[in-house]
Image (tube, rainbow, N blue to C red; front, side, top):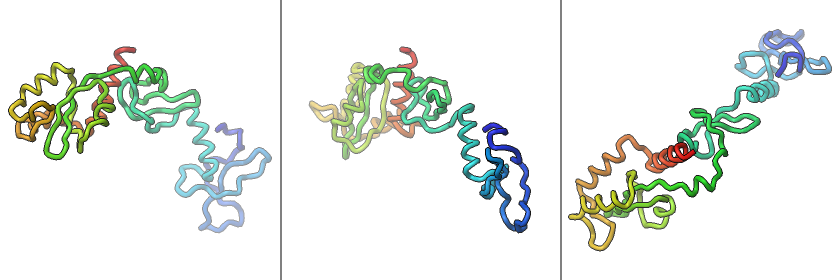
Length: 209
């Protein structure tokens, strides 16, 4: 908002003639037809502007400094969820990656191999996938316990490591202390395994780009 767009008087909490001392100050904007805005200043505002003109000022400044908000999806480059929106587009607030620069197809085709640990009732499945969202959705489970970066070779090592508790001919294991300790180590400091996986994908995208 330019000072000349609405006129003068902004910043002075003057009480109009005839107004009571308890009345809120009048908006300080003078309109294009030289009439003063008849609305009262917004309660608690740092300048004497009504709510409407505060929003006009906000929109004007947002064009210059951007509006910070949550991204609809994690940044494909760094995994951050915070973005800054401008009229020309949205960028990541952390790394300034422009949202939409990478075609969706490129991300969809990008795989990150993981070993996953699922709990279903009193059993735990150890499997592997380059697309765990699709794979996990197809399996019966109560909870995703953890992810571990690795492919089928690592999965086979885990199967051997916990073979004493494996149900024959399956990838399901009985719950036991050694397996729970391993899962606890993988999930230490991780509040959401899916958010961790999204960060791995984001880093992979950034490296490829």
